[in-house]
Length: 83
Image (cartoon, rainbow, N blue to C red):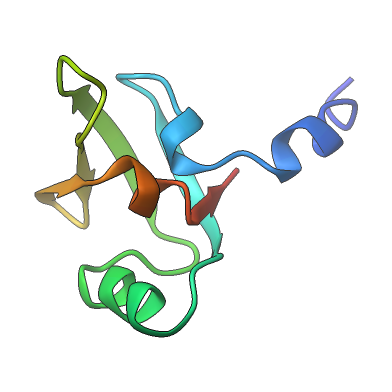
């Protein structure tokens, strides 16, 4: 039963993670400056990201990464593939 949802989880991004949940970064889908920007903020492969809250209109998301709070646009969060 544990291996049945692997295809469903494969395309999940940080913007799909519900409020209050924690996810582990699999990889960054962005390129160039966007990918570097995310890495500079501490979002790298294997790090855990906790979704704290989402703004009333859905953008931005507030997450906790490596012990600090960070706000991300939905477009940025969509470039972070998680498991």
